Length: 376
Image (tube, rainbow, N blue to C red):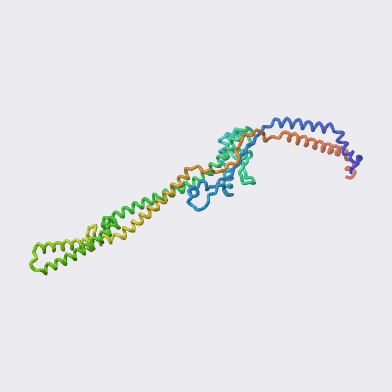
């Protein structure tokens, strides 16, 4: 333990200069109190929210077009996307224009090079970060408490609006793709319809399913009737005393049935009959091919129109971009300056400085300068 004899040389200069030490300390206290009272008062407002999942705006998730469950809260990538938007110059410029922060920070609007400095000033007062629970925090320090709250709310709404806007842009591209695809398919259907009409006129095709059955029935019926008529004609010719009119009547029927069968089965490509089996069979494969193409295209359009309606409904909806946890409030207590801390630190600093100055002065005054000349 240091004795009083040993400590006295250290304490004696301080005791001798006690008025100086106390005076300097009091001056520092008074000046720091005056300066702290002159400093402007700042208020801080804060809001907290979570990132919402993009699934809340996707047509596939809303209408159950996929087997995956909908997610309600965003992933790490979604949170990073929010932070990227929050750190962009677009947000800062939006706040500067919305709240006239050029005037607030005293920036000369005629100086075009001041933009980066102004953004830096705003960014120093606007804090956007992710906390330990993955929530996004936005804080704003401002001289006016209401403006601090309004800036925080505006920043949060801007971020949410931008997130939803990007999602809607993706949906709009999908909608435009569907509309383009449907338009192209309608043109193809028109082309197929024109081709089918030409085939109908060229090959006498009306309704293939009904027409083929009717032609087949007509051919078999005509063949049977013709065979019966020919047999009757032969029988009449072998009989004696048959009236000429009866014989002529049967011959006329045979000729008519032969002409009908020829019309139904003629190989002539110039036949224009809608009941000619060869003409009908010649064009049927091509007709069915284009008819199937048109039917498949109509089915595709129907499905795409249905999906397009889902995407249009999702696009017209207003999905959330965030989940609000804590709404920003108008602060009723200042966040800066901490006047008591300023005064305490100033008094302590002045007290320590005065002590060190006294010791240094006494050491300088009592130093044996003659020894330096002797040693030299």
